[in-house]
Amino acid sequence: QVQLIESGGGLVQAGGSLRLSCTASGRTGSVYAMAWFRLAPGKEREFVASITWTGGTTRYPDSVKGRFTISRDNVKNTVYLQMNSLKPEDTAVYYCAARRGLVDYEYWGQGTQVTVSS
Image (cartoon, rainbow, N blue to C red; front, side, top):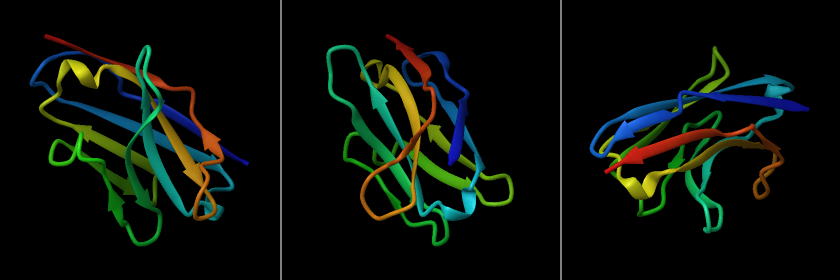
């Protein structure tokens, strides 16, 4: 099992920045990749960013590319999401996730609220 704890959410004005953190514990040696997703009211869950644990390969959707940056600290077993130039449409609960395989994310954190005011 892998446990994930997120932190760093909050309220910020449009154009501002926030950094989210996700610390993994448990069987972290089995993790292949970690990611951030978000869920806004009335919308489907959206993929935000991912990073492979060993090689550090990253992926982003067009909606956040150039504004968000995912990184990891293998020593601290922590993944970060640096969010810049935030927009009101970025408001959502952000979830950290981890997977051992190539497809499905099996482990999820409890989520952290990000609210961007206009």
